[in-house]
Length: 332
Ligand code: SAM
Ligand code: SF4
Image (cartoon, rainbow, N blue to C red; front, side, top):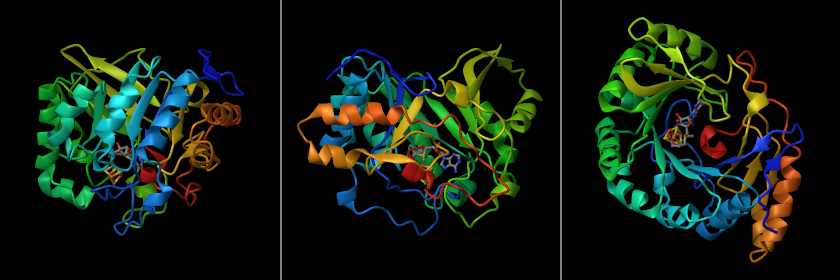
């Protein structure tokens, strides 16, 4: 039952963007994302490559035109190039994107470009090797910088950095990161930390830095001009007169973007999450496993689920997290 009709939720929002998590595993343990001793899912619970393709294809058949592959760390999934190759050819898919920590990019950027990947976001929270190691608990800054270079050399030209800003840990690097992005011609987006999963290493109330504060810091050195660019998500984008890069701010706390939300997520175990700040989900894995050759059942399940998408999220830093899953489970 393929249909060119655009998916719409119960609030008449067109749903055009899927974030598909291809693994919950990761080679980093970022302090805001997961605990140091993280327990990952048994492999049998995680969608296999054919199942990921089936899910992606069903969404595209229903009118989704952008897919972002995420995780966990997508590059620890050895099937990623196969998946990119197969998804990128789906008629109707305009953009296939990847969010990565960059650690393995130097090995596979070229192959991913050849397989049809359109664009890459790389998470980078510090330019200081020791601090980078502390924030990621296992990461080496040089590997990520080499990865970014490899992606540039492979021909990806809209590479974007994602920075989660934490007070007292990397908030003093905001300007350094902007200068780096300007020099390397990389877009950059600053993200407010979200209360997903219980973490013990820092108090999220104390570490919170608002997008307004970060913008004020940047404006001390670089004049920012608001643009009307939107991806239908929580980001607001600015430009500078003397550089082609864009500077974005993702503000799940300080600005409400739900009215224009165009996205849903599928977790590594195949749960369709309709809203980042809501626990409700629909099990697509069961539908895929019970109907391996029948896209109708999957498409009908997705259609039915989309109509249940909640109107908005509520995050409250003063309360214990209402969302108990970690970001690597969510598909950030
Ligand atoms: N491993 C890949 C990476 O780090 O880019 C992809 C998955 S990661 C979960 C996706 C994005 O979510 C990253 O940019 C990361 O910084 C961000 N993230 C993780 N936990 C977060 C949290 N609690 N609040 C805000 N952003 C978070
Ligand atoms: Fe891994 Fe990405 Fe989470 Fe860091 S943010 S632990 S790299 S999934």
